[in-house]
Every structure is written in C-alpha cells, then in structure tokens.
Image (cartoon, rainbow, N blue to C red):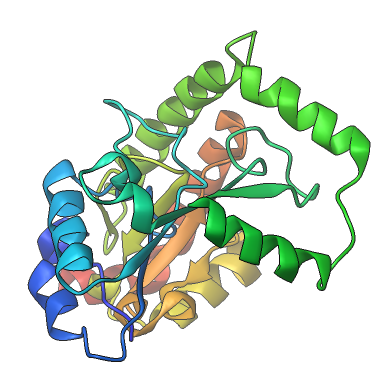
Length: 255
C-alpha cells in the first residue's frame, strides 16, 4: 500500500499516514531517498520515526539509496546506521546515477548475510552474470580517486539553482528546490490546465520533454518532472522555450 509525499509537508513522509497503513500482513517498508521524482532527502527525524515503526511492527526496510551521493548539502543519513536497523535493512544501490554508468545495469544490495544468500539464489535463477569489465570499472568508480562525484554534484547544484529559480518566474509554475537527486518536481495546478496537457504543449510546441506527475502515482497529478542532467546552456534554452509557450495558460493564471 503506497504512502505519499505531499508539498504541504515539504515532501517529507507523513509518519501517521504510514503507521495507519501498516497491517498484520505488512512485511516491509520501501522508500527512496533522495527521492525520485521530488528530490526530497528524508530528514534524520523522519528516518528515526520510520525506524521506530519498523522495530515496533517487526518490518524489513528496503531503502533505495541510488541517489545517496547526489546531495546538495549536509551528509547523507542512512536508516541502516540507526539503532536496531542493521539486521532489518536492505540497501539497494547502483552505479547508473552517481557514477554516470547509465545503461551498464550494474547494482548491488547490502543486507544481512542470510538475506544475501537468498538473493544469490534468486540472481542465479534469473540471469547469469555481469560483464567482468563493468565490474572492474565499478570498483574504480567506488574509489573515486579523482573526486569526480563531488565535481558532478557541484555542477548539478548549479543546474538546479538555475533551473528552479527561473521556473518559479514562469506564471503557473511552482517548484520547491530539491535537496538531492537531479530532478525538478513542478506544481502546475495554477496554469488551469491538466499536467498532461502542459506536457503535450511543451513537447509539441517547444521541444521540451517533461513527464506528467501521474506517472509516479495519483499524488503527482498536478506536477511535471524535469530532469536536470543536461548542460546549463541546454537548460537555459529549455527555459526560454517554456517561457514562450506559457502564453497558452497565462490568461488562466491572471484570472
């Protein structure tokens, strides 16, 4: 059963909502922080409360930490490190985001040994193995001897600041600055148009691609998700195109 990240809560989880959805049949809590699509980084207090629920109800926690290194301030807090959580947490991570190894399909899990033994059995009966050269590349990536990840995150921060600041100047758009990952989660409710229509207008009339938020669940129906991985000059051009197309809904915003 899903729980939702809402703008009124700064896209932090509502712990009471999560607690209300736990039943005797519940086995695990699953979350993604930094989050796709919102860019939210769950606060330490939020993680402590989720950990308390997991212990209370004897639940596993599956923490998708694929964006953990793409953090715009502070240090990443993993629920794995909290009291009582090491033995009930499964971390899912990979190389496609932090190390720009998209398409290599290389990932890993961190979990108690008995769980890893079960995962080994699953993997052996699902696919054969990862290519050796990509495993060697992954080892080099983890060492990050040239601080490439830090440099990349610094550039993403600049792209975030550029894109979010200018998006918030476009009538009908509202975007909270993400704390991590590389997405802008934009509220378009004030345009007066459905997010799917805004998505269509941007693609067909401006050549700018975004994803209507309903693709991520019903709580996203008034949102668009933009990716910030393109170079700054391309993001600036995209913003100019969005600004031109915004004439389609400016009248609705002015009313």
